[in-house]
Image (tube, rainbow, N blue to C red; front, side, top):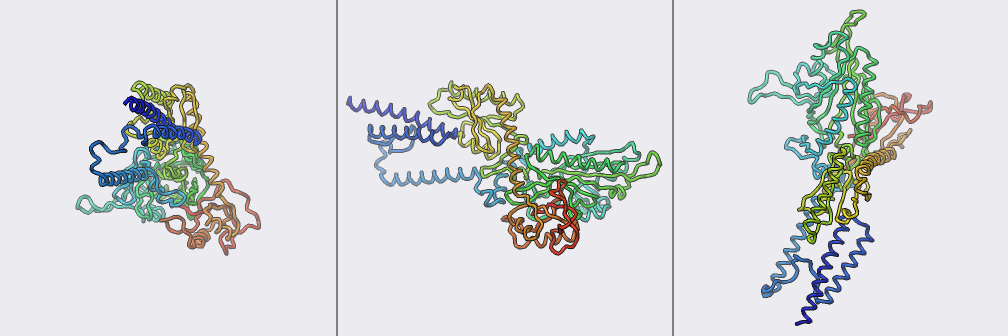
Length: 601
């Protein structure tokens, strides 16, 4: 009996060591320590298990484990074991399914369409709605839009722009007053034709854009040169109904945007505003969203209906090899002022003169472009300047063996770091949920694209440090808590610039200059955007689009398409030479400039 009691004592001591060592291994894995460090501690754990089996004759099981038969239950025999085995197998499958469904199942480089759909839903940006082409913007997405609106709204007010709001409904007469303008939008206009069960005397349009809604009021408000310039902007929603292949954020029936509408006495002043606004759009993409863009002018074929000229910022989606229009700023000339009789009296001649007008818009498409450009197979990667949460603090190493005092101390230290960062204008929050493991939380916040994760365990508290993990490259940085505000802010700025540099490198590697049609087709099929000499004629542009379509498959679920003109870049790659020819096969016209072509959203 004494010998048995001694063996039991040895077993208890080994069991305690095994429990502690198991916690050490779990802690290292949760912190994503190096493989060598984890392997060394796993070896210690296996040695302890071997000692336990030698001392007791049976495998060690952690406290609360379900292994072994309960006393008095052996008589159920193999049938009970089979039942238990099936239950464990079912439980294991259930856990596997739960884990798989939490993350992304599609890979960005293999199935972009499915990846995009999964990443925007699982990261909680979008919820689908029961009207086709319409979507619910969840708080994560709306916060991104708020960051964009705060920046842009502040900047346009520096230019003297004021905000206003016009009704969503447009009369039939007003909408059809500018024939060229409405012809371009006609297929997309949604009409209200009934009130309850009663037919309306005249259908009312839901705005696809607001030129025809706003300009009758401009004609009332502008009488003298003293009323100019008039610079108004509204943040609203518009509806454009007819289209195929809707994609959340990128192409939707209803979307949020800002639309600015300005009127000037002087044409040069109007021109200057077009470029000032375009520069702000560049800053939104490059400085806020970390996405490089190409500034340029749209061709005659692609310019805004009713405009004298349209300027644009164009981005590139590396995963699909397609360009995407980021935002546009239009000079409308006097086209609309003549149609709506927006005139002022010249102070010198006292003659009635038509005003010069601009319009400009930026939409929630910005969010979709950000997802497409930066996201990976783990989920979103958000640039810090647009992320609702820039830093997530996760306590680690909490075990059953910890005392309440030790646990409270760890949580208190995490909260102190969170409060310190928040006080320094870092958008920081802590995840103190006790029903999820640290590993689950890591995956959750990586999926949501939080730029920086801060981990703190008992050892970190003891050493006065924390571990910061970057979402963009997975790099781990150990930081003294005393330096945490300065170091974390520096890391966030570095993440912002690193995301921009990576996206620019991807774009530049796929921006190809070509002068022959064969090379044009080869570059297009290699998912590039192309700079090529072009004569500027719309008939050549249409032929380029038709002849480059061929049988190319752009991506699953999307139609095959040819190359369209994206813009005529302000920064030309070279001067047109006398020996250069228009890229369109058979064209005998002299090229005027290099034009950016590519498949496009």
